[in-house]
Length: 319
Image (cartoon, rainbow, N blue to C red):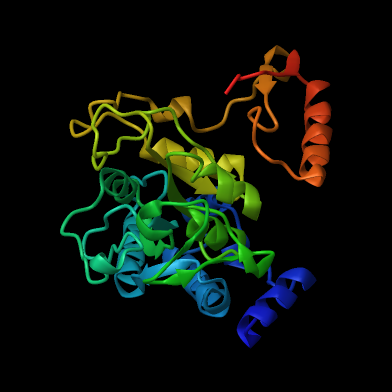
């Protein structure tokens, strides 16, 4: 392990990251922007400073777009001071998984054939985020073409787990999860076919939600009617995730599975009566090899949840 990785591990273990703007939630940052208590440029600069400190060891980010992001942040500040209407993500830095196209910003898919690929157009989800006021700051690392529950490729190398950069961060949205967990970015995107939003989120202690097919339009889906692959939000908390998801949803003519959804159905979060929930779970899908310690922790968590909901019981999926 290199000296930089050792330093990151020691800093994280000792809790040495300061409570600056980079540590605040996206919800709080958006509140501060709306109150004119902090500028989008100040937030962006705090994130860039954290990136310079942490990313050499974590290797969570692929291409960065700091120059254009600073231009966008200044424009967001001007919009704020004019008193114009603000989008839900106005002035918030966001990382985009390196599988989704970003206009004018290198998009490699983690594949050497696309090492110099700069798209002319945004992915549909990226376009929605820009319209919502997000500041596209960087691309986040992914395995080659997104294939695998890891995050390493021949273009950018391997992304390290935020708790120990010598270990696996999960995948395929591992770059996004590590950028979130280390405070480099308050929000990030991911995609999921067989767990690529959920696996790295679980391994890095953040939130990754696999949306229902069509909730977030994906105009890049190679098989237009296939519901297997989805794009979705990642964040450090449920509230931040809901804020990001609310800006992603909506009908798009380029995706036959997309449908109109009101952002207010998602954000702000509404309280629910936990006693009405019914939860079915499986700890191993009936066939997966699970470490004994993981089984123990999982069962303990399910027992804790069961006392708060109507029903919480195991289900046999017969896979």
